[in-house]
Image (cartoon, rainbow over all chains, first blue to last red; front, side):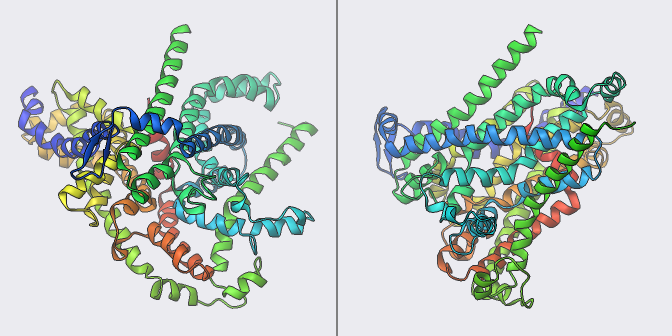
Amino acid sequence: MKKTFGNKKTIAIFVLPALIIYSVFALIPIVYNVYLSFFETNLMEVNKFNGLKNYIDLFHDGTFRKALLNNIIMVIGSLIAHMPLAMFFGNAIHRKIKGASFFQTVFFLPSVICGVAVGLTWTFIYNGNYGLLNGLLKAIGLGKYTQVWLSNAKIAIIMIIIVVMWQYVGYHMIIQLAAMRNIDAELFEAAEIDGATEWQQFKSITFPLLKPILKIDAVLIITGSLKYYDLVAVMTNGGPNHATEVMSTYMYYQAFNILRYGYSATIGVVLMLLCILSVGISNVVFRTEKEGR
Amino acid sequence: MKRSPSEKIWLVIKYVLLIAFTITCLYPLLWLLLTSFKTNQELYINTWGLPQNFSFKNYVDAVVTGGILRYFGNSVLISVTVVIVTAILATMASYAITRMEWKLSKLVYALFIAGMTVPIYGLIIPMFSIFKRMGVLNTHIAVIIPQIALGFPMSIFIICGFMQSIPRELEEATVIDGCSVFQCFWKIIVPISRSSVVTVMVVQFINVWNDLLLPRIFLTDQSKMTLPVGLTNFKAQYSTNYVGMIAAVILTIIPSIVVYIVLHRQIMEGMVAGAVKG
């Protein structure tokens, strides 16, 4: 038996195609990217070693700081907006409600739709002339607040976060709902017999047992918010005047608009480190808590 | 069980909010669909209501002047190739990792899974450089290869998770009956793992179909673009023909929505499982 399942040639045939493609086009480029971040390069022959200059420049680059700040606003905004809303809807659907599967299917739907299509749809909603949002404001007598939403540098990033919310609240709800359904139903039955209200049940059963998944969900929201590209690229492309620039759009701009590949690679490294860091930190937090128990 | 008055009020609030969010999710899509049948003038005058007559002119515009069909074809070509190749190679690799006996299997698995934390931005510049040297920039290969490579972590994670639960006795019995490892893989393991492979395929399809970044970077010819890039060009070129663009948006999202309606359970499970690892 061992011979049949331990034959080196057979193993190689099964695993090597995937492993080679993955190594050449994913693992090696990651390392190469770190290397490139120390150079000024046009990616063909001119390679000037720059040392840490790219990183120092990045630190002093006002637009990059603005982009980073926008990403942080997105992280915080998404954490505040997605998680409680997802939890509310998840809990509502979890506790015997009619049409549960209908609601969950509909809420998840936006997250499978192409980000470009979503972005375009919302540019129509935010449009200054005939947009749905201005129409709605006029209809309820708040006409004085109508404006061209995405051209207002102060609020454009908030308007984008709202779209992100529309697209992904259902996604986070499904994640939390899956964890809620893993909770032993007898706990709720026992609590009900003891006369606990739904709020009490949520507070002392659902929420405590949901904590591990909430941490995972938080990491997903953080890394997701650091990586957003499509919506911003379509709705504002970083404008007006870099007001909605995020790291991904700025990285694209540096590489493919003004051809500073080395500098762009540096942004890529920073973005990657931030993602790995947020996952790493959450893992450490996890482990210490498990040991503490 | 009887409900107290406060519980009844709470129940009403819950339904109101659930229905409100349902409308928020569906109304923009419905509005798009209705608007896609209107004329540009109608869009200004009658933004909210039903179109006066359902004309398919905008769809004809999107196809004839917008060239949406070509983008559509490119998107189909790229996503179908990626989905099939990823599924086959990831299933094979998962089989070797979970069912065969070799020292490095854990390490190889860890290498694949590590890719789930790395954002694509950590490798687009080097990939651009590699493809430039290979001379494949501006060909579909330049989009297909990275999509396959980047699809492995999620795919292998999901398929391995499933294969680990298959009892060993099944294979051992077939091997004793004289089957080779290949036959065992093809006749026993693949059919049993079908559901997890389908999950991987639909999730991968949605990801690739919707992706904007890679085609935007690696392709330059209009004639080779995929739908998402085509839509952004549409926005730039025909910025006054809003209704034509809306028809193009509808054509772009229809395949994802159809796939979702048919396979929503797998998609939900897959997208959640792929994200919530460890």
